[in-house]
Length: 175
Image (cartoon, rainbow, N blue to C red; front, side, top):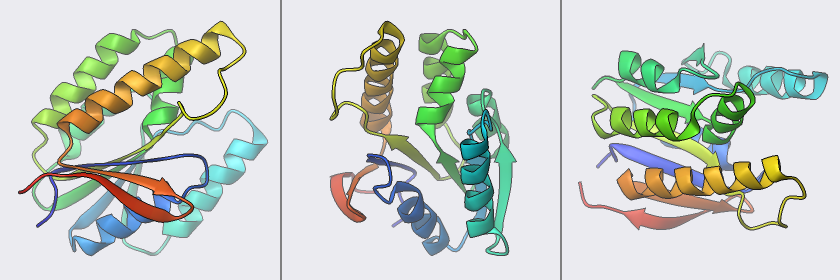
């Protein structure tokens, strides 16, 4: 059975995106990639270019949505399509940098996810396992990301934690 809502968590370079993409391919549904990254510098431009190249010719449609994620999910979710959101971490940092109301935007996202008309896979970084950030903004981001991850995980049917490329199932609700 396909989970309605899947959260794939892990640290940097843990294999989150690759695993999420493989899960989406396994559904046999039309695949839509909702990308949240913004190319603020050359390194990020290269990362985005590589992610696009990895999916090129593989049946993915990509929509870049750095801020309006809830609306994009609401518009595109459906029974014949699998949405892959990569990633909640960049979306949250985009909101914070834009001065948006994080709690309100997060609540809006959760409301849309609760009623999504088709399956959704979300990728997010687990940021609470490292050192305490040095700056107030860094600590505020870490705390907001932790709260968002908890709320999405509570709503999700399936939660997978990636470590060293290995998926660890944290939650699997019967369908």
